[in-house]
Amino acid sequence: MAKKNKPKSKARKIIEWIFTILFVLVFGGVAVMNIVSFATKDKNNGVPNFFGTQILIVLTDSMEPVYKVDEALFVQKISPSKLKVGDDVTFIYPVRGVDTPMTHRIFDIKAPYTDPDTQDGHYLFVAHGVNKNSKQCGGDCSESEENIQHFNETKLLGKVVGHSVFVGATFNFMTQPWGLLVLLLLPALYLIVTSVIDIVRAAKLDDEKVVATQEAAEANPDDKLARLSEEDKKRLKEELLNEMIDEKMNKGDK
Image (cartoon, rainbow, N blue to C red; front, top):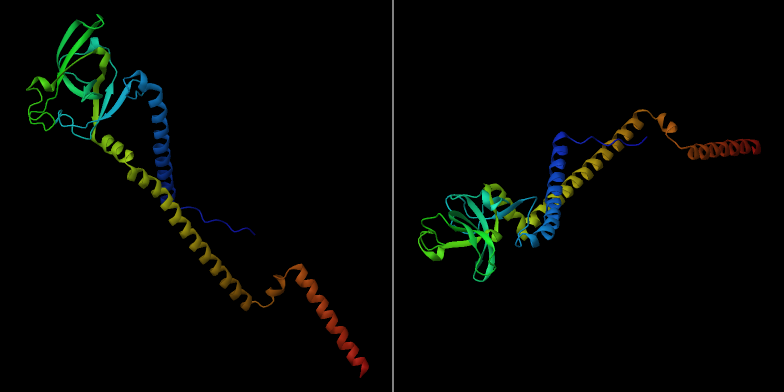
């Protein structure tokens, strides 16, 4: 009879479900993000666009205490005509010669604005940070002209519609090499531990079964014959028959 496997406990099933969901979310999310990034960033100033929403991480303190460093921002694409003074927006702005996503508050909108180079009509936005004691700005972010940004609608990524410390911490954790290593090792460690436990349990059950069988055999000697295989029974019959024949032959000689 085949040995029945012991059913898994409810706690173990829950843990396995958690690891499975975590694995799918992490690696599925990374795969989706990479695909979407390659498909959308070229048309969105180099920033991945997930169905109209961009997720960016705050790197400086220019918008504190509204948005903290390492916090995630959810930026929704929006028509420039719907923006107003006081909105927090993300846009592309050159920092040391490199186009960089920046999030600041709009303080002025000039429209229509004619680009002196292309002569095209655009909205011109004026924005700066809100931190009055910023390390990034060297003090008040609205104090000097060097801390104020002017950009037109072609550089606009969208309006900030939400922010999350948890999402920012999770994103930063997952993008670190050691973070991905931990996520990979946790399921592997769980599988190793549970496999060792299963092996130990199986060995213990086998030992208990052997002891129980031996005790039962000692208690019921007649059962030993019933447990013999057909081959052993046939061999035993032949040996008994040979012994009987030899015994009769020995009596006949006498």
